[in-house]
Length: 343
View 1 (cartoon, rainbow, N blue to C red):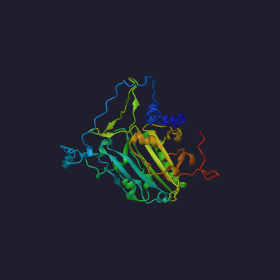
View 2: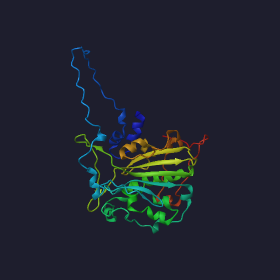
View 3: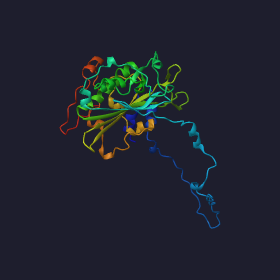
View 4: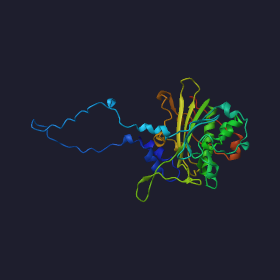
C-alpha cells in the first residue's frame, strides 16, 4: 500500500486516534519479515535422515466419531442470527450483541427523491418488534444518553411513501450518534451529498453501518477496542466510527459502477473538513467490519467515485436542506466526467 493511500486512511479520524485507524486499515500483506540468513553444511552420507511421519491409520472420512457435537441443536441453534430485515425503504442485518445494525442498505433514484408523498412530522421512533425483545434496542435506552438516534438510512431518502418514511424510524435503523457537529451537521451534509449523486446517476445504492475500531493506549502502547454502552441496563453499543459504501450505477446492463467507500468518526467534525479525507479503500472497511460488499462486481466495471465526481459537501443549514433535498449538481467536464476537487 502506498504512502499516499496510508495518508488518506489515516485522515479518516477527525478526532484522536487517526493513527489507530491507519494501523487497523493497513494492508498486512505488505509487511515484510526480516530473515536472517543461515549457513549449513551439505548433508553427508553419514548424516541421519529426519524421521518420516507415520501415516494415519485411516483417512478422516472413514473415521466414525463416538460423539455428536451437533446434537446440541436439538435444544436450539446458538447463533449468530443476523435478523435480515427488508422493509419498503431499507434492507438490513442486525447485530443482537451490540443492538445496532451490521449494515443497512438503501436504493435511491431521481424519481424516488422527487416524489414527496410523506411528512416526517407524522413519523415517530419505534422499537423493531421483528427482533426478539431481549435483543432489540429500546426507546428508553436513548433517554438522556447524550446521543442522537442516528438514522443509518435517512428519512429524507424515503419521502416517496409515508409507510416507507415511517419504517426508517425503526430503532433497527438507528445507532447512537454524536448530535451537534456530527448527526445534525457533517453526517447530514454527507447524506445530502449521496442524494445529489442522483443528479447524474440514474441509480445509487448505499450501504451504511457502524464500526468499532481500536485505539492505542497512551499508557502501555497496546491496542484496545473501547466504546461506551448506553441504556438501563447498559446494552446498546456506541460505535466509534461509521462507514458508507456507495454504488453509483450508470443504468446500463453490465455497465460501470462508480464505487466509493468512506469512514467517519462518531465525533464532532468541522464542516470545513474535506469529504475526500475520509475516503478509504473498500477493502479497509471489509477488514474492519468482517463484511464483503462488492465480491460480485468485476474489476473492469469498477470506477473510483471521487475520480468521476467532486467528492465535496454542500454545507447548508437544516431549513435549507429540507427545502431542496437533492441540491445543485456539479458541472460536467468536456469529457463527460465531473471536475475533480481542488485540494
